[in-house]
Image 1 (cartoon, rainbow, N blue to C red):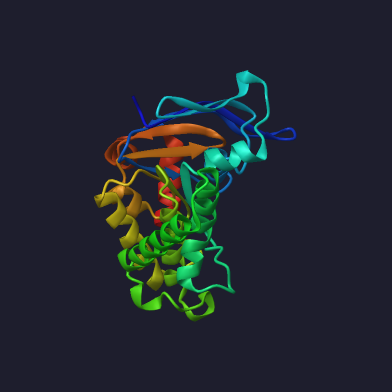
Image 2 (image 1 turned 90 degrees about the horizontal axis):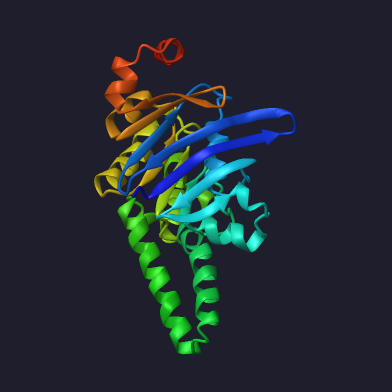
Length: 264
């Protein structure tokens, strides 16, 4: 059974149909890249998977468990959305770090809040809570080390380059231990010379078999790191396959035109 199953997802904003019946699977440890022109629906799809948007119709399953099914006919509560969102880490284009906190605090903040809530439900003692939070902080320090920022843990976002900020954002997403890590054009806000350091971190995660869904305009990166590539066009999946099938063997006119435009 696939880790993630997406079935016939649609998303309308008023009369505008942004997603028009999207279906695909993602296996555990697989890297899926979503490519396509701006406005093709890539980011909207990612936001639906993360429950930042609610699909108009369709079904999302994780490990065989239904996270969303429009046929059930009931809206998810805010709590239910938050719980489902924990399965998916999301790294945004613009980093979205808290400027008033250090790199380490940015990584620990959400994880600490989650751990406190979990320990409260377990009616844990103050000592147990303190020990659990120390573990969160220790893991956060390890994550910053894993993205090459152990020496920057006490720096504030304004003291970090764009590439360093994005690496902090990746560590923050990993701190919540998601089953799938999602990236929404993680290098689009970076200068070209900073792009490589972020892509290197993502390649390292791929080598460690982190399941990832990546919206990207970096075609060479998508070709080299992906197990599967989906080319979206006007809210539908126009081409899906291995990097070789999508980039080299597809005779689809739309993807040929798209690849020509990004390579020029």
